[in-house]
Length: 226
Image 1: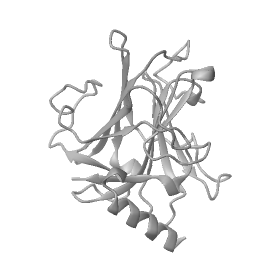
Image 2 (image 1 turned 90 degrees about the horizontal axis):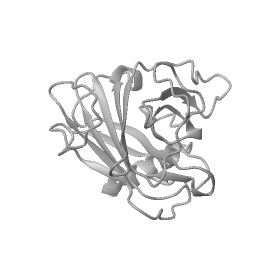
Image 3 (image 1 turned 90 degrees about the vertical axis):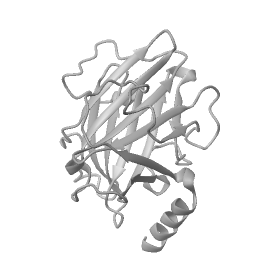
Image 4 (image 1 turned 30 degrees about the vertical axis):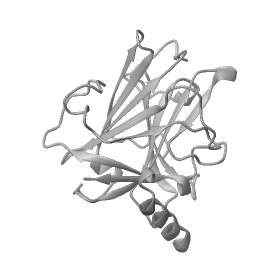
């Protein structure tokens, strides 16, 4: 496993497209899910425009931006759509099991480079629904799953006029890394989106897992604090 991980990290370092840079913010900010805000407009970004198997998905890609502060990691998903598949009875006040059945954006984040099967899964929907899970692919029977609580906050917003929805996350750093954040630190990250329903359902990936599951940690890229 060590040689494989070393090889994967070498590939990520050699490929700028495998890195999402996150820029520092001196202050924390309220969640607005507004990409044109002062804090988000100039943030670095990557795009998710490929399917599970690496095939290009027609239409506008999903954009993902990131910022960080001394306390939090922020992620913003920008999700153009044709039709939304929304849960009919949303309850943003409580965790929503099986949120993947509807439109959702997902971030898989891991800080353990020795055990890459351990990571956190965090989701946000257009209606501000959420679910967070602790994953251990090597020990699924003992993983915390939905019993784990990150303490993160989310904001979903639908711009029906322009047919784009936005999903924002504010994740406490202590929930995803035991070390305090600092410039140059790297985390492992997978960025995904599920859109639509039925035959039109699409599974977007920034780094395609090349299989019919997002849970392939070997395919994750890097998040780099700068």
